[in-house]
Length: 354
Image 1: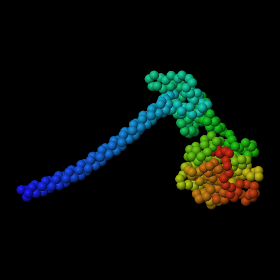
Image 2 (image 1 turned 30 degrees about the horizontal axis):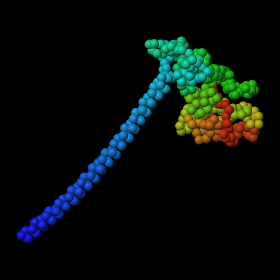
Image 3 (image 1 turned 90 degrees about the vertical axis):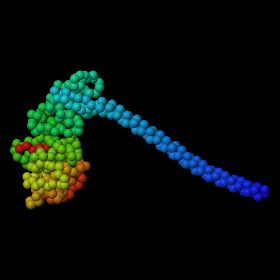
Image 4 (image 1 turned 45 degrees about the vertical axis):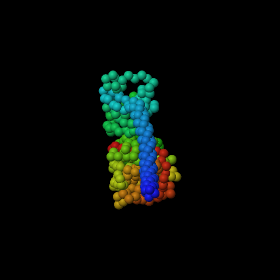
């Protein structure tokens, strides 16, 4: 009987051990599952936070796009305007038409007057020459004034500029159409001396005036390239000097030297009150003009300059490469040797008409 009880007791102990082991295994499994569930929940929470952040960013971008679109519609497209000039439709902006604050166009489109557009084409009608208006509009857009060399065409354009009261165009055309010598030459003796260096009957048409057209090399080349014979007149303080070439300027890059045996430099008023003087090309130097899109007018050879206008509206002289002062002149009282960085007060370029 005792043996049987012992066997039953051992079986119970064994069963209890197995039960404990099973409980431990279950506990471990539960811990593992709980850990995985916790990890999954954490990942889900993290993903939710990221998704919310992305949604918030998307809303911000959407609102920014809406605001940008609203700004463009009200700021840009609303400022565009159509004008019908003599039957020719132009589309531009109100800001362009107001560019010259003293012009009639600025006054017309200032908002002070009620202007009614045509209900069919939504254009504002102006009863003037439609073809010539494009020159005025281009000038208001970027300051560029391109026009025909024909005098009648220039007179017509001047008439339109006076009607619209665009003073920049008026000043430019009046100077360009004047047969007078450069404005910086105001001494009658200098005038007669200068004219004696050119053929009888020579007239001048203004191509470029730095104080009006801009003081950069790009402005010079825009107005003067491919125009044929030109006269360059420079004033720096009391000094008046410059050069003549029978060739055309170009915006070359790199520098391009153009031989011109007819070219010359001159001084009308130099240091120490020196007399007017024509400075002819140096024999055998193959000199003339130096065309460089990064510079203003330059005279010299392909390798060196004798006169060069820089980007910063300054001029340097380094005579002796392509042009020589006469041996008889007083080199201490004239532009000679090297003279660097003179600041310019005015620079004018004229088309020379023989």
